[in-house]
Image (cartoon, rainbow, N blue to C red; front, side, top):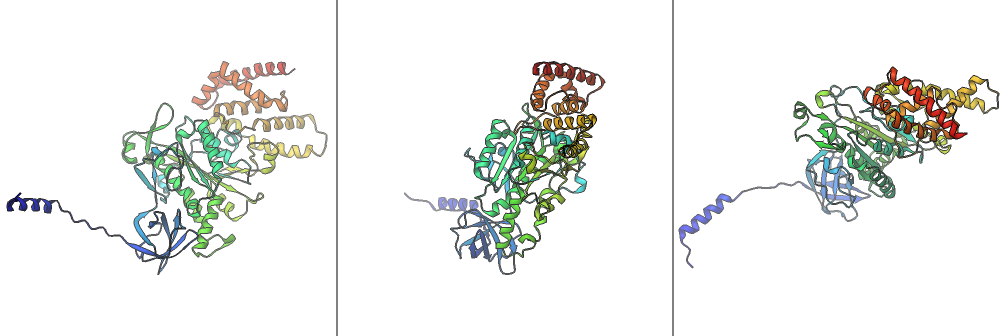
Length: 532
């Protein structure tokens, strides 16, 4: 077959027209030293602080120490196959994680990779792990309640949307239970939840996932797991990754479907979406726990040869937690009014709240829920110590009805504790003091609550109001739980308008008060008759 010269010319011209010159420039370095998850690298002269690095085995690293001759990086993954002389590439990006609705209902590692065996996560959006906190002008005061569903907390230590409330206590005092109960209580309320497990056993995390699935709470929840067997760099980065996943929802605008699960309103950024009538989402995040994150940061810092300070922590350990918790906020209306509420968890040793990390986090947060081992062992669940637990937002985070009935509850319980200690001396009490002591005992019983059974705020208001007005005075202490269950069932069956009034008007009116007193009188008589 003969090919004519003009045909050859046209083919060559066509190929030249389609030829594109693209040059890819990659900056690479060489590992000088590697071990214990730390790599020292030479040749990365233009490396950024916090930049992602790619190692030859596919693992990612995070550049933390920028020194004159080398870069100190932590390896976020398998490091034992890395050797001196291996090549390391710059990515040109600071650390990012996938974010978006695709992560809801999933269990992921701190880099956003799935851990639940449910297939890949097809998230199209990423967000920087380290993002600046909203400025003062971008915030508004915390004024909406975030109900935990726990009577002892919602009544006496109220939490508002955008608040940072520390959960602190010894090991095995119910800290995780408070976080999971709060997540379960957000069902149908349009709040996105993120639970970050740091340094926990994988079996514990699996148990939490199972509990949330059983309660239908995984539909609006993301679990970020950096278990005890995970390398220190991943435990260090986990809270920031979880925060980035939650921030995505806070800064975007959404509408809820009929099940209360958020559906994206549009693909715009906040400014445009607000103009279209959208609102920012309310989000909740639990960091369980930051004591272990601080320990992993200490481990990394010492291996990177950073100078140790108090309790061998590096000097910037306060900044470690402050830059994380400052990202929680109630955004201003021009930014959509979204919120991020944080429950950082701190584990104390023998109740030592004056240790370094506990005092750091106490000074950063807007209050603390302190759990007392003695109360826990005595059967008081949740084991909240009302004396030193506090919410610096206070009544601003309560509905009117709760603020009215719970106003003196803390003082009443504090007075009861003193009376109880006095009564133990065997002193004979006058009738008025005995009545106060008996009422206090019943109120303490009323505040007890089983795990994973959060209570709606209207039910809490009715029970606390009734107890304060003497509803339980004729009921045996051991019968309080049975009375509460029966009374709330009767209210919902025969006086449902009272619950509706609290839910809509946030407080009972004059007519509602009369009906409530009538309900108390009727049910108390029936209950006492059955008891006899």
